[in-house]
Structure formats: C-alpha cells, structure tokens
Image (cartoon, rainbow, N blue to C red):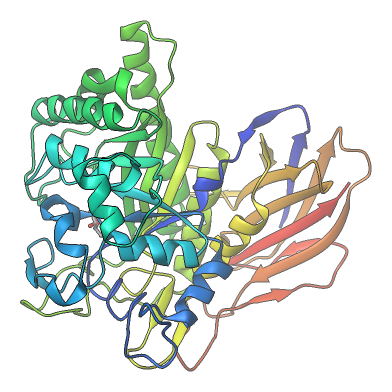
Length: 488
Ligand code: AHR
C-alpha cells in the first residue's frame, strides 16, 4: 500500500504546550504505595521514593502530574497527609474501598515531583468539602504570608511556597459514582465561588472546571455548557476525560482516534458557544487530564479495605500502544485548543510503568510512543492532507490506514512525523511532501512493532521495544507505530 502526506510550513495548527505530555498519580491501588513510594525497597531513597521508578518517569518525559485524584480527591482531607509521618491517621479510602495510610501527602508529593522533574497539577476536593478548604489549600501551597496555613507549611519544613500553577476544581463532579456528585447547576455555583476564593488567595493560578467524565455521559454537552456558563470568566480550562475499551472489535478499537478527535471538537464547540453567548473575548481551552485505553471492568472487583491493593493492573499490548499513540497524535493535532493532557495513570494502575513489590520496575508497550512524543513532539504542529486507503468500522465509513501528526522544530531544523499504520496485513510506503521547507531528508526512523499485535512486556521479557530502522525510504510495517525524523 502507498500513502501520501502533504504539509506546508505556512499551514499550521498551533504550538504544542509542554503540559500536553502530562500524567496522573492518584491514591488508587499501587500507584503511590509500592509504585512511586516504597521505603523498604532496596532502591528507594531517603524519602522512600523508588529511584528505579523515578528514572523511568524522567526518561518518559512526564511534564506535569495531576494529583491526588481522581475519584480519591472527592473525599480527601489533605491535612491528614502532612507533618510528622508517625502521627498521620490511617483512614478508609472510600473511593477505592481501600485503606489510606497517609504516608504520602501533598508535601511528599512535591518532593517526589521535584525529583521527577515534573510540575504538579493539584485537584481540590469539591465532593465532601468545598470552597473554604480549597482556599486553605492554596494558602498552604502557594503563600509566603504570615498566616496560619502558610506558616503550617513552613513548620512542616517547606519554607518556600510550592507555587503550584494549575488547579482542578474537583474531579468528574457529575460522574455517576463520584462521592459528593452534584447537578451541573449546583456544581457550577460551587465551582464559581471556589474559583473566586482561590484566585483571591493567589491571583496567578490557572483553574480547570470539571467537564464531562466521558462523552457517553447522559448529560454530556449540557453539563459542560452549564458549568462553563457559571464559571466562564473565572476559569481557564475545561477538564475532560476519556478511556476507550480494548474489548471492542479490532477495527473499532483502531479507529478510536477519530472518536477522540470528535470528542475534542465537540467540547471546543461547547466552549465557543458559551463564549458567543457571553460575547466574551476570552477563549477556554481543554485540559484532557485523564485519557487512556483499558479493559472493561479493570477497576472493579476491588478487595475490601486493603492497603495498596492490586487495582487496575493490566498488561498493555502493542495493539493498545497503537491506539494510545493515535490518541496522543490527536491531542497534538488539536494543540491549538488542547493545552494540557494527562495519560492516566503513571504507575501500576492502568499505567505505562509497572513495579513489583521489593523487586523490579519495567515499562509497558504504551510507554514508548509517549516517551518519544514528549521528547520530540514539541514545536509547531502542521495541518496535513493525507491520501491513503481506508477501512470501515462500525462507526466510521472511512478510517484512513494512517494516523499521523507532523511537528517541526525551527531551532533544530527538524520535522518529526509520528505515524501509526492501522493495517493488520499490509505495510505502507509513505511519501512525505514538505512544502516551503526546502530540501528534506529522512534522518532517522524508529518503529514499535511485533509480529504479534497482542504481544506485551512482562517483568522478565521486553517483547515490545522500539527499534531503529535503517532505510532511506519510509516504510511503515503492518500494525506499527513509527517516528520519522526529517532534516531540512
Ligand atoms: O483513573 C481512574 C479513575 O477514572 C479516576 O479516579 C476517575 O477520575 C476516572 O473515572
């Protein structure tokens, strides 16, 4: 099969925001305990953080991490996780039916984030708590004042404010199982009041209002419109989430990038409808702060009241990595409006990094497309005219075999093409037309491919790893992910 992609240096989508390559650490399962934190592990540092995991997180290039939830945040008392570790209360984690030891809290997570070279995106509890608590938390984290919460942080050993820039006003507040679930009107009013109070404490922060938990929510669009109608002037982003199931027919699964694009475009339309209604000159952008693929039911069957239970631990195959790569490209291709995105989650639960208690850490197949996107997918994203064969799925008549994004970096004089070949049988010979770039030469080709699309990595066998391809032609193997670097 042959395919053709034409780009023109003058026809751009936008510039990528570094926060497009974010992830998510929630107090669920073994993300925190036995994931990033395991004081008894031989490779842990003096703060109890696993250095093998830190190394993998740094190599992955995670730019920002949303914390501490997720559903967890909707009943979280952040005060339980600060100060002397021996005095912290052990409590139930009602979101995940587990036990929360509070040995890691916001102070500790700040330390971890510094070591991981990443920013923190903080979510506040608008489920069981509210405005006052959110305001106190901003004071604790961001103020240098001579007031109670700022002084409390200092007394806990953190003289300098954490200076957290980006804050989420709750999590999935219309979600069916969310603790403290609210109607769009109730949440809209609460989010508005909270946003105002948080900004009074620190006017420099940016805020995300909770949009729909996913596009199939019964009140999708109405919810998003309503909460934006309340909060438009006081927030910067709408936060949306989506996980696609890998249990569907393979054609449908491989076409998920198209659904993802449709979701993003729909939310942009809603933001702009509210903008029009308000005759506002301000634009609300998207924080896609939970996205991934998973297996149906992976978060159910939770053991009762365990510490660090094995929740959501699934193996990601090459097939999953391909779909997750197409989602990542879709985020890049919408970078004019999607500024923040978090692959959910980071370690152990629905995650690219896995750990064994007291043992190894290893990476899953979906780690690699993210790592390369974060490393090379920074710059100007170009509009593409793609000409290639198509297949049909149950929802889409024409799914192009190629999914791609094209990003150039003016300083390095490099163009990166990220491309997935969705064909299960045929390779694709890809011809790139770069208009207005002068002479372009293929300088590097890295592929992620296995003959078995269901292949997974395990702690003892790295079956799915990137390989260099030596060729002056861009040939994309059947069901493969590819990174092509061109010099101009
Ligand atoms: O990532 C797991 C859960 O999925 C999060 O806690 C919640 O926000 C989402 O529904």
